[in-house]
Length: 428
Image (tube, rainbow, N blue to C red):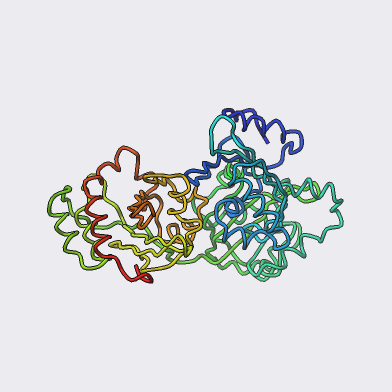
């Protein structure tokens, strides 16, 4: 772990000093959490190494953490997360199943930043090697037993020789005799039939990003080509450096949530106010907003969240020209935008990148819908939060403190329409 290039907050320096001796050269990611924004940002200077993106998500997405962190360690992990969100010093080590299905020991550590209120810094470190050393894990199950658990072809390749040293049954079925003898399948052989993919490119990605992913056309034992989605990651086992090569049938299509919509070019005008007043339902009002939004800041979607704090729920309705939006869907108040607004007394909230968020609502609603950034405005009644109006974009960083002023002329008319269209308590 190279800590020389990380400077800044006193808490970060203290954290690095505290952990540098213990962690030595293990892969680690440093992060910073702004509790007011519920925004967690990964910082430069650490080495991802064996830490893949799915492992790092345990700090952001509670649902992913419940799936990835071993059940026996979850109470300890979520207690640690609660302390972090409360801006208290915290540390724990848990076992996490990574994107390849391997169990890794992950250390989580954090401390508050004394120079900035409501912010803390921390690290996520892959400590499997240290744990193996402490526990004397040389008696651990052989890797060939582990890779046999995977249904897709998996190869382990020696970094020194670049030849395959282990293959699971699916890989042996695919490559057959190509895995046998002194001329056994080499790593470079996997790249020969894939135009534009070089060993240099793969190793550069491994050095700087800890993994490489892409499409490979591999030849089976009979010389027939197979298009595969491939993933390559470094793996150290008993002082031997290897590459974990996972091959999967290439999936077609994908979920395209680019979300380009067709928007009117009208500036804010009396016509917008008239359209809001004529709307006879919340979806109609949201559609009217999209039709009359500022041409200088077009949104890809807009939502209304009806807030029921005492019942611990919010009801969300959304409209978008080309995205699947919620229709009166209910979510917990806890972990919502509304909770953040109430907790910190905010008059608005801008989320620049939902993938950096630790709010559960972003991971169960916004990210699955393709929303990458949003601007939220609360509307109160008698001092109690009643509605949150959310303008959304499929682009990161669409909204800033300056440009959201373009919506200001419309907000009072939107609030009046929300109050006029008040539904029965169960609806949205």
